[in-house]
Image (tube, rainbow, N blue to C red; front, side):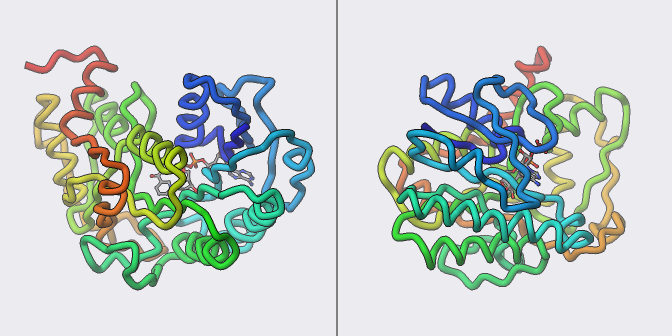
Length: 295
Ligand SMILES: NC(=O)c1ccc[n+]([C@@H]2O[C@H](COP(=O)([O-])OP(=O)(O)OC[C@H]3O[C@@H](n4cnc5c(N)ncnc54)[C@H](OP(=O)(O)O)[C@@H]3O)[C@@H](O)[C@H]2O)c1
């Protein structure tokens, strides 16, 4: 059986349904909302404390995929003790249990373990997170590397979906355009969004092929956030005047933001032999899901 920790979150839910559809036995944890997890599969878990008794009661546990956490960068900074308890201390409690059972952990990390000064950091490059969130993710990465012989750590860039109103990067923008609202987008930060189904299929490949190690995974296009907004606006035939370009500083964030939110994904592409879905192809999937005809 596979346990998805954080199965009620955006990526965790996708993993849960992916394994369900493939007839793999799967259970998933939730904290504040169970979402659409089947009643018999869901497990309440609060990693503010280290109580993992219900997980310890699970039989035939073969894998644990760590998709949980407080990933809001501002909250990690403002509520440092709380986020550290959830993201680090009690994540490590769960990892220690993983080790007791001799299970290979699969941990979703972030490109924010890098300093964001270079466009295409490789797995082996220096790790110098600038945000509390990035520091917490790195602390867990180090625990895993120092304590497990086999593990999968995926350093993800911004992950998006194509589902109608799923409130991820592109669909949230499209929803605004459809409501005649402006898109406010930074022109001094670069991102390389990755499609959530690529995250799922590549992780599945790494698991099935017994791979171990750290893998970067980002999209294959790196653009300013505002340029992605323009790309979407042109694709869906809206007026470019709907985009308001600003500086990241205009959002008034307290936490430092990296300039580049992108990674070199050569290793995972080479090892999995898979291709990363192009953003334009994802726009077509979004159009299908919104039943929009593009001429
Ligand atoms: N999405 C991205 O763009 C992205 C990029 C890079 C890395 N990542 C990493 O990938 C992972 C999944 O991301 P996501 O976007 O799917 O996150 P998400 O939607 O925010 O989901 C977070 C999950 O963590 C659970 N959780 C929150 N507080 C908890 C607590 N106190 N105890 C136990 N569980 C708790 C949530 O439960 P409830 O919803 O039930 O409260 C939810 O299931 C995260 O570790 C994130 O750092 C994500």
